[in-house]
Image (tube, rainbow over all chains, first blue to last red; front, side, top):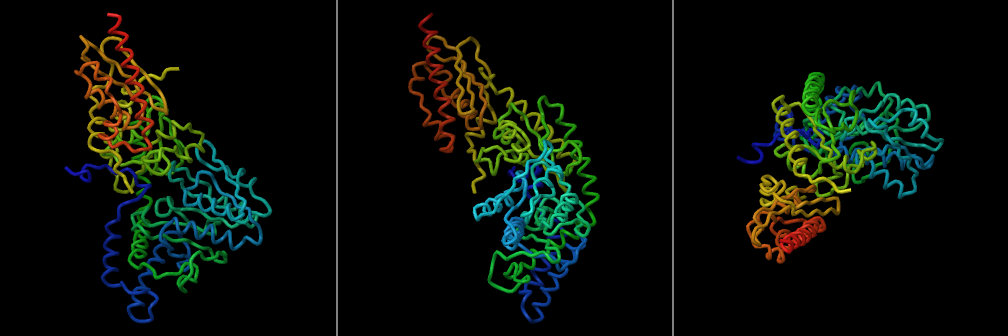
Length: 387
Length: 124
C-alpha cells in the first residue's frame, strides 16, 4: 500500500486540504472567469466580478468593508508588505518597532531586515504559556514607536494573544498595529470592525483554501509604502495581474468558514481533549503552550528524554510537526519553545499535533497509540546517561 | 527540497532494531558525544562474537548505525572488529555529511568494545 494511503494527517497548522466547495468554485472560475480582471472588456468584467465576490466573502467573514483587502501570494508576502511598508512609510516619524520573539519567521525576518536598515526593534518575551502580558507590551512602547506586530494565534503552541487590549494600547500611543492572522482567520471568529487593528495578514491554505494566495487587510487611512512596482493594480500597493481562480478559492473558503467556524471549534475542542487525555499520563510529558484557552486545533507536547528526530520517524505514518526550527534536516531547537523557557532537549523533542475539519476520532485514537508506542520504544532503546 | 531523509536501510534498522538491549555477560562499552549516547554489549565464545546488543540515544541514523553494526558483526570472529570502519555504514545508510560526527560516536564505542573484549580474552 502506498505511503499516501496510510498517512494520518495531523498537521493542519502547516496546511489544510482544499475544501470540496472551494475546489468546485476554482474549477468554475478557471473555466469561465479566466480573463484578466484589469481588462476593459466583458471578459475582464467577468473576472473582476469573481474578485469582487471573493472580497465580499472575505469581508463578511471578518466583518469589514470588501475594498480594504490587498490580495497577495500568501501570509508571508502580506506580512512583508504590512511591516516593511508601514515601517518605511512612517520612518520619518521614528524608527522604533515592537514585536515578539515567538512570531513566525515571516515576521521575524522582516524585522531583522529592518534592523539592518537602521530601525530599532524591541523583541518581547512571552510568559511561560506563550502569552504576551499587555502591561509588558505597553511598557515597551516609546514616543518614537511607529509600528507593532503581534500574531493572533501562535503557529507552534496555539497561544492566542489579547489583540483587542494590545490594539487599544497602540491606539493610545498612535502606533500602527499589524497582526499576523495566518493561524486565526477562518479558524476562530475574527471581527476586524471591533478590533483596533490597522493591518491584518492571512492566507487561504490555512483554512481549506488554495496555496499561493493570501490577503492583507489595510484599515482605512493606514499609510503603507508598496514593496513592488510595475502596474496600477490594487491602488499601486501590490501591482500585478490578480490570480482570479486562487482569489475566488480564498473567497469560497471564507464563505465556508463563516458558516462552519463554530462547529469546527466544537469538534476541535472535543478532539484535542481526546488527544490530551490519551497522552497526558505519559511520564514527563510537558505541554508547550497554554493548558487552557489556546486555539483548540493545536496541541504541542514535549519530553526531556526522547530524541525528537527519532520520535518523528517512530510516529510514521502520522504526519505531525517536530520542534525543530525549519525542517528535519535542521536540528536547531524551535526558537518559539526556547522563548517559552524550554530546554534545547525539550524543544527538540516537541511534537505539534494540529487538528482540523477533516480529523476524526479514530485518527486521534491512532495518533495516541503511535505516540505512546514511539515514546516507549525510544525510551527502551536509550542507554542511561553516565554522569 | 528533500523530505526523504532516510533510505530503506535506515528505515529497516530503525524500524526493527532486533539487537536492541543488553547481551548476556558483562562486556560493555559506552560512549557519549555530540548529544548522542551508544552502549554496546557483547558475549564472546572462543574468539567469536556470539551476541551483540546495543542501546542508543540519538537520531535515526545513529540508532540504525548501531543496529546495522550488530547485525554485521554478531557471529563473526573478534579479530574482524579490527577492520571495522564507519565508511561502509555511512554509505549503506546514506548518512548526511553533517551527521558524520554522530556516526563517529559509534566508531569510538566499537573501539572501546574491542578493548573490553581483548581484556576479557586475556583474562581467561
